[in-house]
Image (cartoon, rainbow, N blue to C red):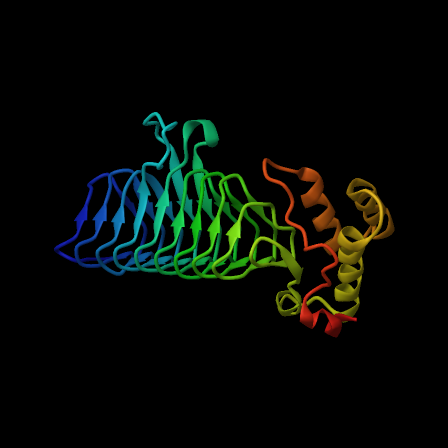
Length: 271
């Protein structure tokens, strides 16, 4: 264990093996650092905060401060950051609120770039990437292996599905289905590149594209189209995740393509 003499570490903080705490860091009394965590310098950790094994936090990040919510009543709510994450400069993450479940959580292997803010009661899956200055409001849920472009703002209570990609400088005010591309308040197609990287074969991409077209470009009421897709693509794991996401619903509407819009430009490669 290496602790710089200029750091301030509370006696009751729990430190795992091989922790490195750099110059001018502050570690509060209810903070737990897993094995191999590295605080590069000028990192501020407070509240009931747990940092997973091997996570690296860069200068001027502030994690575990109370939520920016008028409904917070001073309770011992928590922030949980998973293992092997990289948290870059000036990132802020708040603990949860009593009425929102009490926990803000970040999964494994997340890469949170400069200046991003994760508000109270948010839940990020594993393998999530936030580019610079992504801002998410309270109660946002982001699925595994999702990428969010820089300067994007996500409205509170919004869900972003697994494997989605949200373009930079986008405001997200509606739920984004799994495996999709979103940009400027509309769906623009499927995240074909991301799906290929996770090993989805040509047949799987073709099926997902057919389901996407049936959902958003077919005839009739959307509820009927959703039931038809659930029936016609039963057993397809990707389509079933999309259907389950939509049926689970939430407090926000569903993001959709512009009327008559086709899938993304590289979707033809999936056919």
